[in-house]
Length: 461
Image 1: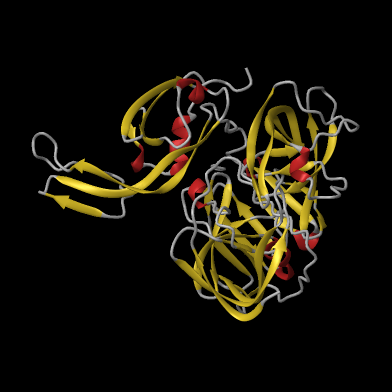
Image 2: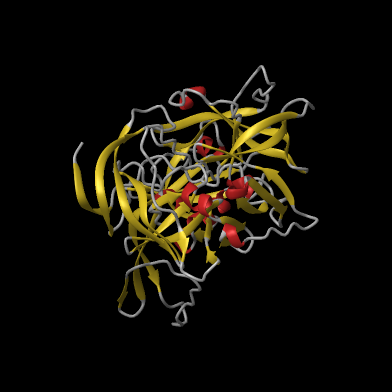
């Protein structure tokens, strides 16, 4: 293996072809045997807690982090052992220290991939810092999740932060408070429920119960996975009674470290966390082939992700092996289903021309404009450089496929609204607003504008 004292990484690459906006899998199992000793995270002297604002993007918690002075964005992922930096689109650069080439193996059916291991890096989050952080860098250009999230994401971080602090995560206010465990005194209210955490190989597991097609209460052990945007994943187990419900459909579930993950999407009648009951919970059963790299799942029955976790405000107390749940305003929110069958993603930039004045010569007012370059032509027309949104995948038999939409179509407008004025998540919501809604989609294909219409359908009818 080649090893150097310092390494300068420019984070750039090309977007991959299959969008994983709704079903991103950041569960990256590092199965190789690397030593993981190193310094811990600490507060600046005299500080015992730190509040941090985060962005909630498709059920994923995105936090700001400085790595060796470079300001980056990381997903807070309780399913990952060590920070992983991706080869991303853009011009961001970061210097890494003590670099060695390694091999990583994770979820998906592909071969192990080459990566870099880097030691002695300075991570900082306001008053929190670690000057000896170990991280991995995945150089594969296809591991670029930014186009599917609509914002630049540089990497994922998890266990090291959860290990060193009590982490109070409030999904409604979009804030995290990191507490020094030595100065933390838990205050349980009557609406709070505390359940045990099992920490095994840098990952946390919680007990739960599910009802599948029958009324039997089946106890399960689930990986606690804030890095999954999905609700709950289950491994079929006939002996335990965990079978795939009759109403299901085959789908692409997401992208693992070693390739795509496929499986069945369905609904389970009920899921229980402590005494909180979630009815008709969204669930997925990944194909066993996707987990062929994991030789022994032990007594784990699946994982619980962001679409369930966001319904609670959570206190992760790894040092005390507990998690506290309090349901919030998201608790009864409907689950997201892809009723159109369309997956979308950013695909670079494109120019659009817009009139600045109306027929009376008055300048039009625009509340939002995401263009990055503007050119005025004769004081009446503006050229704006805006994100290009494309259809990256279509589910077989879906309304979108039956209407004639194709992968690679450039989306121009949804129901008469020009989409460059909206964020990627907002466009996705427009495409899946409610059952029975007619959607009109203006697209560009081979330099021609085409209009398609379809009606959103309940995927389980």
